[in-house]
Length: 417
Image (cartoon, rainbow, N blue to C red; front, top):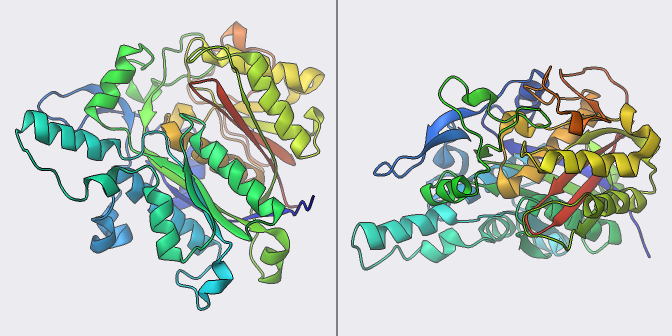
């Protein structure tokens, strides 16, 4: 089977930090939390909880009014991040020869899709007494809105699809895009994920599961504490991250800058419980990613952990890492950037994959914020990063996503020099 090398030639992000990819990573390296106490949009029944919002994002400024009107927030965030990645890759927005892009793909990930549009519709009907909804309700709410708009706007004639695999959605999307480029089915693929979760119903649903970290105005920035002995749950957030994957030879031929290389992807299912993670299933995904990339555990220098700060989840992930990395585990740097940018649901994997690629490119490792002095003994056995590390040479990094339903996905990246 033809196995082509896959280059990452474009990166884009819409994060709570604003300012693009470099600003995003610099904030992570410095351990700056973007978590704040935020009210949900339903002002009649306010729900206050720690949250990560892209407060400075202006969809009309980013996309133009006509295009922005055809989307809701998760698509605003996703399309904007993808446009930035496309520009970063040095690719033209409108192709001079559309046939060249007949095999170019768009594969996106989202867990909740247009939940805000649907919640507004329910509110209009049952709370405000309206008997008609906007004729755009369906197209605003559909989960494949991002890849549909991107394929139209960029003239992509190849496969256009979305993946919804809970918190692993965008990791799966990137992995499947990687496989299509590696096999030669696609020459170029735009991929990533987005979600916008600041909805009353979403907040109440997670609150009911007792998985949301508490916090007030003062303590909210430190509410998400993965691997800490006093961790108290996850923090929801919104955002988007995108990358352009490209056939290596095609990228070199056109003189593209290559940020890093995707070398492996592994996926598995715990097949045991809807919400209770299992180390054995996660270990299978980790082994599959390493095997797919022709790697050994000793090759890994950094792992961007799924690390949600739930009481049950964090030790299971560490156990899976120790099982797969073996004697090398204590020397592998591990951090959970969710401690700063929150849990973006279906967009989390893409945001963390982006952080992992930037760590490789800059040879720097972001920390797990708020962890110093609070490490849970059950999470010991790997090299937890308490403070950002700069100028740390390593060649291979992993990005983990472990979702409800027992779906596990792992990406392996390699530095280009």
